[in-house]
Image (cartoon, rainbow, N blue to C red; front, side, top):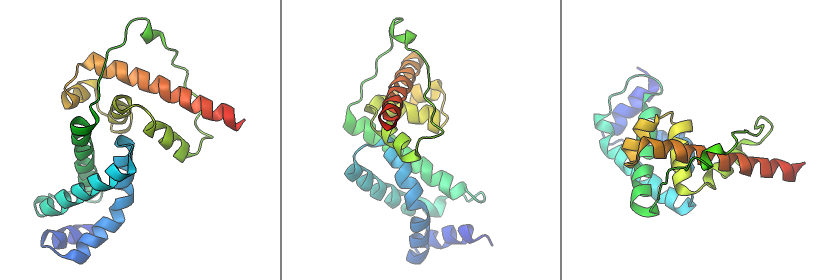
Length: 181
């Protein structure tokens, strides 16, 4: 039997050693996922604790579908909890772009030479709404229709916020590159 599947089975029965192994092997990834949405490290820790409680209390009903399915499910739990936290605590406002604002140049900076932690930090520094939509679109691969449904906004608002997020992120990355030259 697959080792991960066995860990899921044991954790579903309340085996604390199996839960610890699942936690240890996934906490780094899930922390990074949560940190993409939530800028405050203390909130990230609190949210992850809640997410792991939710994960372990419902792991018995998790349908294991092969390697990677547990990580994907846990990631979805953390993303959903992060979005819930944003809606409840960050009071994010979204606005549509005017035609003038849509003319922001789409020049993307060269990121191949940038350390991943710099890119990550620049994403985390985006305003809450921009960061949320950027993550849902670029990282999670959600469509503007899906994002609109998740955040209860218009599709055009999602598109305009993504446009602004990319422009702001590009400016932050260009600024970093100009400092490093």
